[in-house]
Image 1 (cartoon, rainbow, N blue to C red):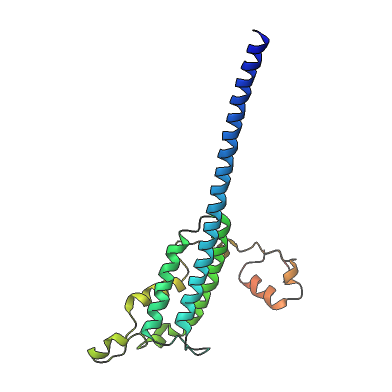
Image 2 (cartoon, rainbow, N blue to C red):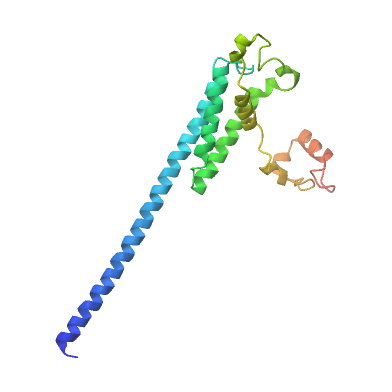
Length: 202
């Protein structure tokens, strides 16, 4: 192989390697850009989902007294139910694991707020709240049944979701734990319910 052929061959090899490197760089860059775009979209969906939860609560609580149930207003219940339904749709578009974790925490916070708001309606206290026993001309004033279903469903702990407190077992609380020091009432309470091992001090 002559010097000219060797140089030509080397140039071709170098050009091929350069092209492969350029393609690999372009692929990595494109992949990184797509990942960043997906993460940004997930973050936007997270933010919108939280806004939907806030708005749903605000819609239901508008005009309510501090300690009372929400005002029995058909429009308020419909608005809150629609926002909660929209929240569920947006929630499915949150793809980042970190964003999903944040959203779970936000959902639990708002679920508890809804639960407290609706608690005065439990049992016999809610009788007559959802619908006026009135003539058909006033039927539109009744709370729309599916809006009540959506809102009350959201306010309850999901049946298919494990309770993190359910992993705490009886007989496993350290009797020397710091939070028990000087807390005689709590120590006795936990001991009476079997959460402190039998050998623990009372």
